[in-house]
Image 1 (spheres, one colour):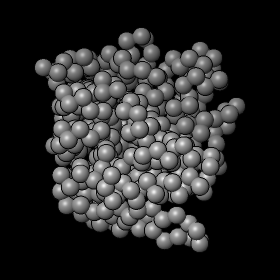
Image 2 (tube, rainbow, N blue to C red):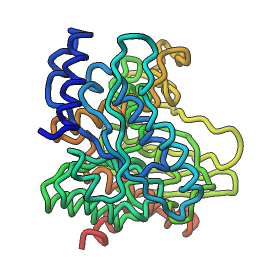
Image 3 (tube, one colour):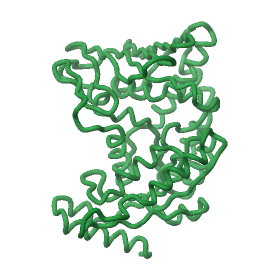
Amino acid sequence: MNYSLRLLACFALALSFCNASFTDVRAAEPVRIGLLGMDNYQGIAYTHLFNNPAAEGDLAGVYVTAAYQVISDYPESAVLSARWWDQAKTYYQKPRKPGDVVPPAIEEVKSLDELFAKCDCVILAGLDGRQHLEQATAALKAKKPVFIVRPCASSLEDVAKIFAVAKETGTPCWSSSQHRFVPGFSGMRNHPEVGNVLGVDIYGGYDLKHADSDSLILPLHSIEALYAMIGSAGVETVACTETPSTVTATLFWKDGRIGTYRGIREGKVKYSATVFGDAGVSTSGVYGHGVPVKGIVPTNDKYMGYEGIACEIAKAFKTGKVPVQPEETLEIFAVCEAMKRSAAQNGAKIPVASILEAVRK
């Protein structure tokens, strides 16, 4: 065991004496995460959760131990990368009170090979989706399980290639928006006031400030949350129209269910939905919070913007079992591509299968 692993093992053992309730988790060999790309706040948010000495449950036993800054021509990449690295390298390094455990500092590395040598798995956290195919391919060929923050890639073709490499190498790989695992969205499936979900009308941001290369990710937060509430893949056709202020899309599932999306281009942005079920109709929770109770949406409960997905990332790295299957992610990107094509054809219905078949050839 090298020095870094010994240090992490000692850190884990010290924590076990501090809190016996999660001794077994902390005493296990820690999972070392390499952070690839530093210009996306999501990577820093996960680092803050994983490296917290007080982390419990699923978040316990995983640590970001190394980071590699990768700069691109994506807007503000260099500025954001420097900002988030300045934060990450100081996380929990100054004890607040005597006796506080200080975790090992995150090491900045200068190459992919150096990063892979210092980690067991990788969070690919760069903003620029155009770089993700090359980066994910390198990590997967190095047999490092990978989680890719939104976006998985900048094109459906690149998404398909990433998952093809994952399959070829037999290495776990997945991607998701954090919105999918916000309790107020995921908890609407089997909600007692809704029952079996028959359809969802969802709304959220459609930020035109994103780089042109990332056009497919503009609706991604809401589309991922829509899939979480519907509970399955299986979209057959998509119809989409747009105006300067709004994008609207209708997704037709093969089993007859319908999901609609309203993308807000102008005005106040809020992420929520109306959920239709065989037991009732209810508004969903809002981003970061829990499910409604008797129609009342909580906003003063524990904020869960990133913690839900962070728990899923930790579980996936510990077990090798991914919570979102590649086929579903591919379908979601095909839906986003279908939205673009439909809008260009004045709202024509676009079959999703034909788009997927083209990238599978």
